[in-house]
Image 1 (cartoon, protein in one colour):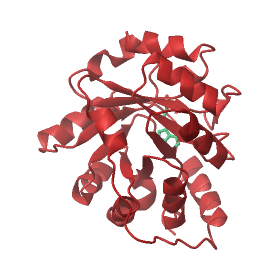
Image 2 (spheres, rainbow, N blue to C red):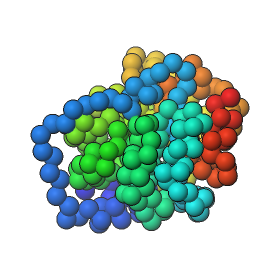
Image 3 (cartoon, rainbow, N blue to C red):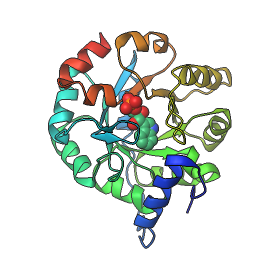
Amino acid sequence: MPGLERPGVLGQIVRERSQDYQTAQAELGPARTQTGRFRSALARPGLSLIAEVKRASPSQGAIAALDPAQAALSYERGGAAALSVLTEPRHFGGNPEALREVVAVTGLPALRKDFVVHPAMLVEAADWGAGAALLMVSVLGEQTATYLRLARHLGLDALVEVHDEHELEIALASGAEIIGVNNRDLTTLSISLANAPRLIASARAQGYAGLLVAESGYRSAADLVGLHGLADAVLVGSSLAGSGDLTRAVRELLA
Ligand SMILES: O=P(O)(O)OC[C@@H](O)[C@@H](O)c1c[nH]c2ccccc12
């Protein structure tokens, strides 16, 4: 399975997830209809917000004991364009039910946020009603294009995540329609808010015409100023999830 040799926290999680899915079988079945709901939600004019249901993280430990369905409704009320739901159980407090519950209560498209290391994880995402799945170039490397094709076959949009120039090259070559740039280095967990603007500008300069998402570390509307007119969307988790009033936190972030 891909990514087993990655260093730091990322490598640990990838090895755990690979164990979890070691004996899984992926029944792809016939091609499913592509709705593109997640993609269209981000393509709307202005900076779209992907609000994340995140109960814990390796960098912060416990964030908030959110009820996923309630959190999703609060985010929707505040004006989020789409949702991201962690399904990784050991470090992010996620689980499959969280995603299923969110899909059941909201009209917003949801991203399965996990460390995809096996095709079965994409089949699950589609079966659970996700509109999209996260594909991390730091995990999948040159297999990113293969997983992208699998996601499409299953009717899913894919958020292809990169953190540096080399990963961006792989994402651009893979044919990704949505590329996310993570400000957080997942091997060290350190954040640099300059990373997403820099790589997003680089993707545009290379003629990339798809959607671009800035990810991680945003806490206030002031932090987003540099993204307007540059990124199509921003992915925010911890600062919203830990705010105590999710609807208000979304409104303040988008103000
Ligand atoms: O909580 P933050 O700093 O707002 O970040 C959200 C999101 O970008 C982050 O959860 C994330 C980005 N890429 C990931 C990959 C796996 C797990 C988590 C992530």
